[in-house]
Amino acid sequence: MTTPPPTTPADPPAVDRLRFGYGTNGFANHRLDDALTVLADLGYEGVALTLDHDHLDPYAPGLARRVDAVAHRLAALGLGVVVETGARYLLDPWRKHAPTLLHDDPAGRIDFLQRAVRVGADLGAEAVSFWAGVRPGHVPEQVARDRLVAGCATVVAAADRAGVTLGFEPEPGMLVEDIAGWRWLHRALGGPACFGITLDIGHCRCLESATVPDCVRQVADHLVNVQIDDMRRGVHEHLEFGTGEIDFPPVLRALADGGYRGLVAVELPRHSHAAPTVAARSLDFLRTAARQAGLAVGVPPVPAGTAGAD
Image 1 (cartoon, helix red, strand yellow):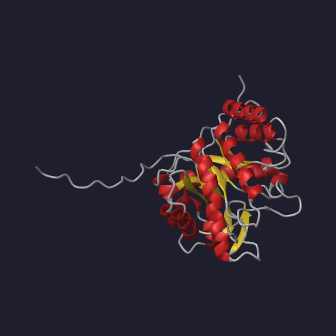
Image 2: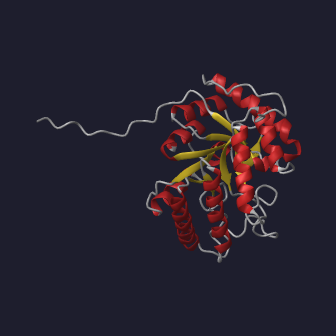
Image 3: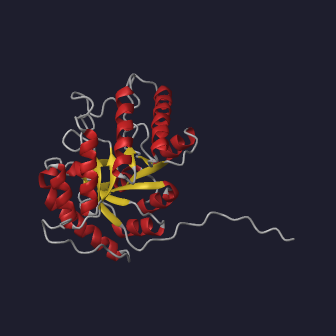
């Protein structure tokens, strides 16, 4: 009897279109419902929802009721969602992003991430995204690494119980700032199935040694969330498309060839002052880049104010 040859995992089938979203941290001056409506009217297919004091505050009263209302609104508008956790001063009004998983007392951050997991589960989010944080100067690197692994393990356990996918984002200047750092953390956690990677396309240009399309290919098997923006080498500044150094059609092609089916969400957190205009320009740019990459694009937007109408 002939023994069949061993099988190897097949590459994920390529997709012929990508789903573009927009981060609500770029709509900080809008009510959340208004931001969702504008984005749906423009033709976006999803949102990266940053939990913050003005957008689905997880510490304000009536959270379950408010989450349910947002879930129904997203469904009515036909929007997918990922949950982002990068609010600047939600946990501490004095210190940006504090506490992180690296601080002496990370309990506030762990509680926030567990709340985000529950919100993500109730919204049907495609992923809940988070990052390591900047290592405090008084904390030795090994201690910070140990704290990060321990904190992430707690969040992974909560996500596993809730059936939620986590996307851990390498962030320039943080303890885990690149793909190699994510791989270290993934191994340290034992390779949990629910622990994927959030890849910010701009960050790849900022600090990775590989080309941006190669970065996409390197993490295709673990990619659960994509943030997209332009950027320059060595400068961590989220730029509008066409004002940095990234050639986007090959990047979109790499995402499609890798079989990525999640949201590709515009990440422009400092552009809230002109959010509708910037969001419209961004979608036009991405659709043009997608066509140049040989991909199909979404259906044209409905007239303003009618998205989700009965």
